Amino acid sequence: MEQSSKKRKRLTLVLRTDLIDAVQEKAAVVSQGPNQFVNMCVEGILLAMEAEDPNEYEMPILELYNKVKGRMSLSSKAAMKLCSVLVPQLYDIDRHEKQFLVGLINKHEGKLSPQIFSGYCKLAEKMNQDRIANERQLAKLQAKSK
Image 1 (cartoon, rainbow, N blue to C red):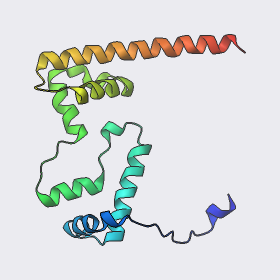
Image 2 (image 1 turned 120 degrees about the horizontal axis):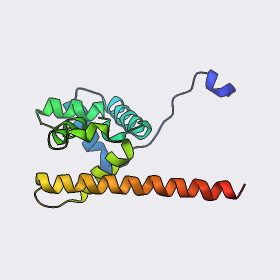
Image 3 (image 1 turned 90 degrees about the vertical axis):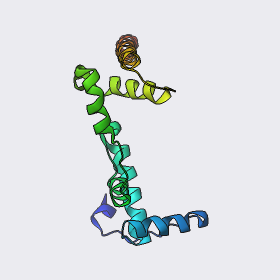
């Protein structure tokens, strides 16, 4: 704890040589130096890892890059809004059910019709109900062991 109150010294990390050209190129696109670019990438990843719902976190450096390049990117938030047109109750589901749903959609190959999407929603709901039942059963078993 005592160290956290002291100012940290700079930490030097080594970037793999095969990444140098790509980092310099992408850093220039977003008008950043290579060090700042790498720091922004690492920060974005760490924040995404800490986010309560990683499906709703967008990395600022990626958004900036796509904006500068004029690329349209469908963020997770935008995708969920579009999906809610087909399934209005989508915003009422908890994060676990959303994770199941996104996982199912990510595994889907081919066109995703409204009927298939609705089927995935029902399957995600069932998977979440099973998860809840398993957690309850586990809690009961753990309570017996005390």
